[in-house]
Length: 162
Image (cartoon, rainbow, N blue to C red):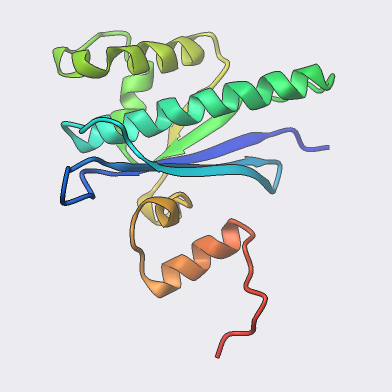
C-alpha cells in the first residue's frame, strides 16, 4: 500500500477586485488517489504573492497534520508528507531560520510551518507553475490546462464532450 502523502498548494494573490483578498487552494493525494481538496477565500488581505502562497501552505499543513494523525490512529505509518508550491519565495521561507521583518504580519503561519519542517514532519518543495495541479482551484485557467488538471484530480465528466 502506497502511504505517500503529496499536496499541491496554491494561491491567487488579490484575485477579488472588490476587497483584494486572495483565493487559496490545495489538493492532497494518498498514493495516486485524491483524498481531499479545498478552495477558499483568505480571511485577510495578503501584502504579497509570497504571503498569499505561504498562507495556502499553512492551510494545507493543518489538513495534512490531521490526515497523518488519522492514518496513525488506523495503525498505518505514512511517510512525511510533501507540499508542492510554485512560489519559490514561499518555499524558501519554510526552511530559512532567519525571521524577516516583512513576514511579521503572518508570523504564526511561518512558525507553524517551519516547526513541522524542522521536525521533519513535512517537506516543502518547489514545483513549476505548469505542473501546479491546485491552479484549477484558485484561478481561471485555459481549457487545455483545465482538462489536464481535471484529469490529474481524477474528476471526469459523465457526458461525452461535444
